[in-house]
Image (cartoon, rainbow, N blue to C red):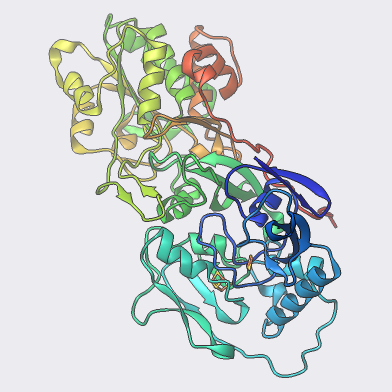
Length: 546
Ligand code: SF4
Ligand code: FES
């Protein structure tokens, strides 16, 4: 443990750290562009330079000022050191660097997507000069598509090389390089090699200015209108921590939420861009019931009344007549409620984890990030929750569920089926197995099974509700509701609670994930990771409504 003084504040630190790291850990802001905690240190932008005094072992360890400014991102912290980032020399350097970086910058903030979250804007205000002394013509560069997701605005680039280091050190694909020298130096891709790797969107997050922008988000929303909700990857088993950025009930983008134990600072493109189905035109929006071979829209009270009749009708068949397939897209709390409802209706009800989609093999990247092949967020959590709801049950796999429903001797007369996948997930085997059974369907998108179900209750995607997912490593993490549920749809948890009330087996009216976790107890109450900063970062300026 060492102690150093930064701008008059005593800061303690452990192990080998750079001055900038110690400062950031102690809530002291030192401007920095090229430094990123997930990348190697190159000390090329020079804005973090500061005056440093350190004990001199050759002079009785007296504190002596180092004659030149030191890059705080690359200078190791040592016991007794003193750092002055607000001294006249340090401030003069910050102003000079800002002036240099802005020489060729187009100053097109009003039409730049990065405005509002741009380090060049923020540092210009905090550390820059108020006026430009540059009278010559600025160098202009064309914009360029450099990959399926990313657009390059070269003349906004400050040559921090974060994107180059990311492609070399984290994705290991090396598509981006520095081309040319001096005032024609610029970032570009190698000819014929687009930025098209599984992690490509991360370069947009780490670019401190508006040089690399996300084509998917481009010109869709000013960032100061966006609200952030902490969430968990709802598409794969990675458990990656994310922010859902949304406004007026619509998701606009997904960003990584740094977590050193899971995804560090990164997410894959499939997680970043896979949320589109949340707002798909074809989302199921109103309950439906089958009438004379055709499905008709009904209101919720009628849908619940009809579903209750169907469920009671199935239960009349005796113990073991009900089967429930719980999708691994659902959070633990909803899986638990489904298991509970099933056992209230039928003490021998069959419980199974739904289809687990996989694609390819797990892929590891040089920076330690992993893209998992399992394309559902909660296979393990659903199984654990069902075992909590019905400790005596043997929770079946998807294949075993189909086998049991097909087995005439099993006596299964009907099923509650849940989906919530981002695409049609049903297969012929399931549709065939359920062809002559009563089916209560809870899903979000139309599928081959939805159109044949006796009653369809429209559910909610993970962005529209709160819950807990258990990832591929057995880590349970909670997520918050980002946006209201679309149209007349309801979360699966709410639907089950409503059904319990309608069936007379429950009294609770509003789905509350936290309350249900407490009821589940065990690891769900004691060993669950909640977002550290539930409110998200505070904006640095007050937002004024006009
Ligand atoms: S494009 Fe962005 S991340 Fe890449 S060097 Fe330029 S400013 Fe840095
Ligand atoms: S952050 Fe230190 S030189 Fe760039």
